[in-house]
View 1: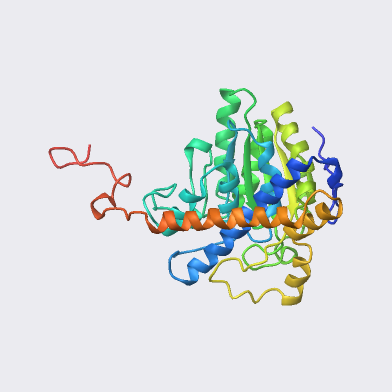
View 2: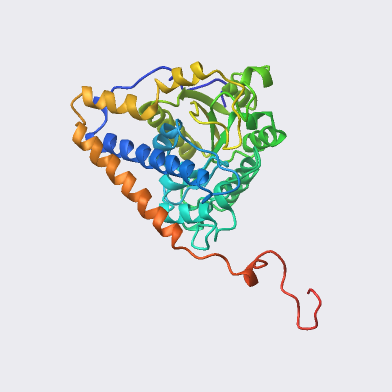
Length: 346
C-alpha cells in the first residue's frame, strides 16, 4: 500500500457547480440550512436554560457532514464526536428525537440520558456521540473488524473526529490496528485548527495530519472542508476506496468553527479578526452565491429552503417541550443488574 496522500484537493480549491445536478446542489443547501438553523436555536435554548450541560455547536462546519453523508449507505456504521448534532441529523436521526435529547426528555434518541454529547440511534447505525476526545476511534475499529470478519455486503465504518484527537494514544493505536488488520474504516478528521483552545501548531510538531496517517501506511488525503462540493468529491473517492479495497482511508477536512468550542468557552485563544475572516468563507453563503451566479438557485428558492428549515426546528422544539421526563423510579434502568428475589445480585 502506498504511503502517500492520494487526494490533492487543497484548501481554497473550488469545484464547478455546473458539474453537479440542480437537485443535488439544492439538497446540499437544504442539508446545511437544517444544521445551521437547528444549531442556532440550540444556542438560544441553552441561554434560556432549556438545554443544559455541555453544548458544542457545528456552526461553520456544515459542509463536512453535508458533503460526506450522501456517500454513505444505510448499512454503513457512523461514529462521531461530541460535536455531532449535524452528523446525526443528516444520517437520518429525526430532529424531534435530537431536540428531545437536548432537553433531556425520554422521547430523545438516548431517552434523555445522554444529552448533547451522546446522541445515539441504532436504527440508523449512528453509534455516538462520544464525549471523550478520540473515544470513537477504537469503537470504529471494532465495528469495522466485525464487518471484516462477517462481511455485510460492502458496508464500511465512517468515523468523524477532530484534529485534537491526533494527540491521543487511541488515535495512533486505532490507525495502526486498522492498517495491520486491513479494516474497512474511513477516518474523517475535521481539522478546525484549535481543538479545545490550542492551535494545532502549538500541539503538534507535524501539523500535516495526512502525513501521520501515511506513516501507518494508510492512504490519506485532504480537502477544503468549507466547500461542500470539494468535500463531496473527496469523500466520494475516499468512500469508494474503502468499499473497493476493504482497507482504511484517512481524509483530513480543513474547516473552522465560527462559535466557541463550547458554551463555556471564553474563546481567548484566537483573534476576532481571524474568525471574521473565516466567516467570509462560510460554507452556506459562498455555495449559494456560486449557485445563484450559475443560474442554479433563485433567492425565492433559497428563502423557501430556509423557511422549511426554520419550520422543522420550530416543530422539533415544540415536540421537545411537550416531552416527558424520565420517571424517578426508572433512573437506574440499564445502569445496574436487577436484584434477585433473594436480594442478592446474580
